[in-house]
Image (cartoon, rainbow, N blue to C red; front, side, top):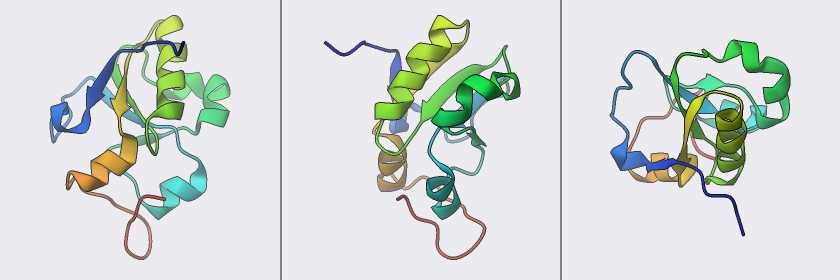
Length: 112
């Protein structure tokens, strides 16, 4: 049985995250480069254990990936290590489908 983690849907997220809140994108570099949320912090899931120091320890954390699977695992890991983290159900696919903004360095942003 999969572990249950605290979660939130994209429509439940404020359009502008309040101070003391981090949107953590755990997708791989190519996914991030194609398009990401404007205010997100990017730490790929594969690098997270080595980069925990990059994540503000006193912030609420919303964790997002493409569809919600990787971010659910990261949410469980962060909560077990002292963070207050919630998984973003539906991930960046839901982010895009609900009309939330995407940015990228070149071309038209998209979720891959």
